[in-house]
Image (cartoon, rainbow over all chains, first blue to last red; front, side, top):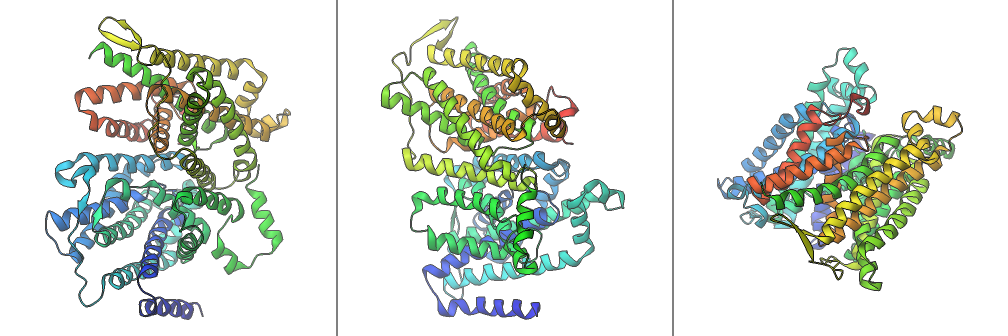
Length: 316
Length: 289
């Protein structure tokens, strides 16, 4: 039953470019990109329970890798894309070894610090990254497809791959190890799980997909700047989507991302000056009212009493 | 290193210490990383700016006003929002404070716009000389106020009933409840005091530099760095953290150039976080490692 609903959803998404075009295709592409980002952060934060609030750093690394590879080294899009993903994963593995030793709030601040430090580094490495002036990428060659459809399909493919990867992780030994780490790291270590390896691997996978999304974003926008691709608000949006859809579920983050992006487009997209204000209010409301996201509501159909109990659990 | 740089570092250290103290207090008492702290600093700066441009209020007088307003804001935010998620996953308290930060930032952008603003009282630019260094009165006043705030916080925490109740709640929540401390109230007061410190630090910022809404991000990261260097949760350690960060940034600007100043701060932060998570002067007690 579940398998069929996934297939139906996928074919609906594949049919979209034939029906809508222009503005709404752009909006949907952006929603799909956020779905990829939310799914990626789900792997490290939803499954392994490490709140990587600075995860946007890999988006920036991916975007800048693609930018440098495609302009300075003149690589075509596909190899540049794959290399950018690998660079993001390698970066996560290298910084993850020391940073993943920290826990809880320390980890949160370390990831935010990592994002700030990396952004400053990109700002300063003028000879490679062109600093604060940003990088202009070559114009997209999209073959027979028009630009909008091309990027829509690329993002959709990326989303399908990351959902399949999450599905696999969910059922694998790694997934069980990550869930064990989330509920009690010391206990997980005691039963023989190599917690460091598992966490570093999960973060590298998360960074790989985040960096891929960043690389596609760079090629799509054809111009990137440090303060745009290392923007912490992007990270926060990933976490709103994660909470809205349900952290640690296979498809929850995608539901959350589509909900938030489409909602924001319809409800307050026309008033950019109140964007921050409304997003902040939505964030507070989601956290206060939806303790476990909407995916859980669909899956378990809990009663009002259970919902009340869950709300009460967090109160002082 | 020139005398002028030492004077500048001292000024920066005072502001950083005030920013870090409130952040560390909130973390130490409630185990909350307040992501709205930078926005509170920014709002305090704008209260100072508004007081000055509307009724010509001196920045050192409006300091008290922004302290009071931020106390009220922090108290209400804790009582009606943060207290509701404090016992669940840390991600929820983080997100809720970030939501508050976005609401404040959005509100300030609506009210004052994104332009740079400055507070320029009549004695702006005037100063006295120590040797070869020039010390503007405004900046000297900022350092004095920073020291006064530190002393005031120290006395409040050590000598008043409320301060001691806050300390008790920080050490052991259940035990504090058993001896009759109203924990919801004390948590709200702690958040209020933390935010008041942020607001007053913001007034000091407005008296020293030009201000703009996007400054909240950089003051949030300085709060992180200062609090981590001083030992997260160790309120008085924030003075050491503030001094260390200010010195590193000033020295960095002299020897590596202005553009590497921020990067240096973050690199020191990450190193301390990984190698000495309990801070430069802290004890292991404070860290959740």
